[in-house]
Length: 188
View 1 (tube, rainbow, N blue to C red):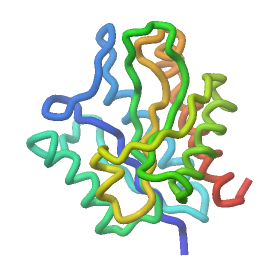
View 2 (cartoon, one colour; view 1 turned 135 degrees about the vertical axis):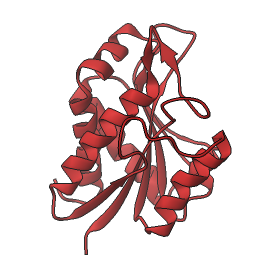
View 3 (cartoon, rainbow, N blue to C red; view 1 turned 45 degrees about the vertical axis):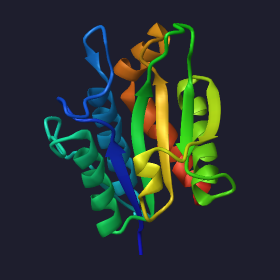
View 4 (cartoon, rainbow, N blue to C red; view 1 turned 60 degrees about the vertical axis):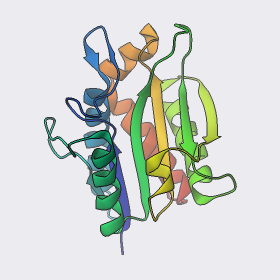
């Protein structure tokens, strides 16, 4: 049986729950593009079956931030997925902040080890710094999924180098995450 991977492209096209915006570039558009590419890579591999939270660029989930997050988790839990990934982009007041980081609910867990592999894959494919896996027990998608969950901050939209790479080469981010998943499952 195929390993089921649920890919949540963080945020909605418009509020409620729209993401960051920098110089007219919207986080949810980047998340959507990387997610579609990651799902294609996984679905081309007979070891995996992937589903997306947003199946077209204008798909809106929920009528509030709460119901948007609930819809994403419900879709993964009711499938049921074996692993949950939420894709995001970071923003910082420090313009030199750069790189990828991951958030999980607890240390010494399948999600923590998956996050570690994914960050290694992203660093390998994009050259962006690996900022490490961090514990966050407050994030709804990490708290309420019934399977291991990793929230990935792929790069900083506030950093011109990161932003350019996120816009111009979403395939490298998808490949980095994909290679991390393969490494976690021993399929590289």
